[in-house]
Length: 114
Image (cartoon, rainbow, N blue to C red; front, side, top):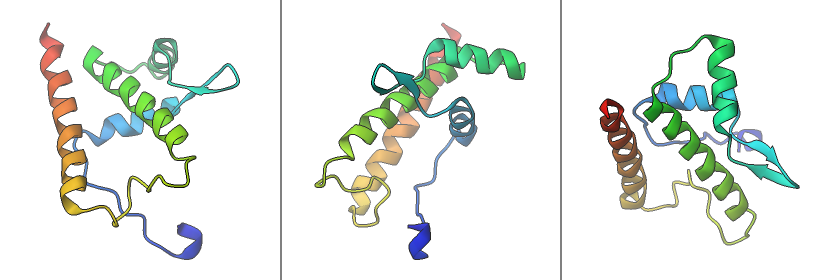
């Protein structure tokens, strides 16, 4: 898209620092003959090297983002799969995805006291 001069439009996201942390760790890990979700060890190594304090719910959210990324990457190999950031998606679908992300982060944040 950038090569064609198109702007990449992504929905607004709460807790954007989690995305930054996830991308610092790496969106996925090598696994067998392909890629898999990042592991707890990947997260712990990143945390230790950076001397970063991370809550359990934040680590869970990062792992879930990695799992969703790997799943979507596999799904995206199908010609019929639309880009998840496409403006061709109806607004209600984009809103639903944004709401689900907010709910995930909220639910995980609420569990941190347990």
